[in-house]
Length: 292
Ligand code: AMP
Ligand code: ZN
Ligand code: FE
Ligand code: FE
Image (cartoon, rainbow, N blue to C red):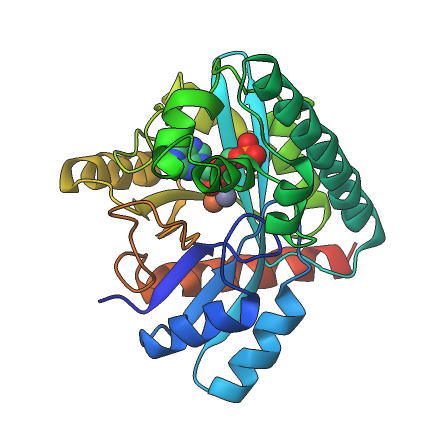
């Protein structure tokens, strides 16, 4: 078991555990440092920290996950050590969450056109006020009996090009990295390779070039220890992180989704040295900003 998980989701986006439940689970799995990285939201951080305070011995890093759509597929960028009070960043997240709501409505309409009837109100209930995502629609599809589980919902309807798929407004990975740097956060490239548990997840195209380009924009880390990556995938990513001077990060990307084989917190994550390196970098960057 590991002590660090820098990628987990709560009900503030598309996870199914509240921040409190999630931190209880992490503490009971003997995790020492976790980053709550909800999609386009830092709304769960205060609750997670309050619970961490009660549990003792577990630290919560304020994180976020931003989704980018590029011509060659989806790219996700994590931000660690986000300033949750920064108004511009919060405005960006609020706008993006409204976009997600509209997109959710459109996806339900598209599914209806192909004969798959879902209640959008039910999707909203499942999202419980958090950032609406495809996993909520997937759960509604499971409930309505169209598919057995989330994975099948993505395979059949919600994956890129599926009958219910609607793309998001485009944010480039470079824009996401720059936005996070402006906020004082540390950008980390998420899940760069194929993940067997999440069918349809492809390797990021032109990975080496992408890393070199994003590094010049301020990328500091790469997810190396991730979910169900094989030892071969991990070794390849360790080498890439080293080559590009990126801190090896990672975690389970836990959603408590009910997908068979979903890795649980504590099963995979980076070493403590990575957290120490991230903290040093954060301090250096903050010091540079305050002396400007
Ligand atoms: P969205 O942000 O609405 O586009 O939804 C993307 C989210 O859906 C990802 O962050 C994952 O949490 C989840 N996801 C994507 N692909 C799959 C898959 N094949 N199986 C299960 N969950 C997935
Ligand atoms: Zn998610
Ligand atoms: Fe992601
Ligand atoms: Fe994620």
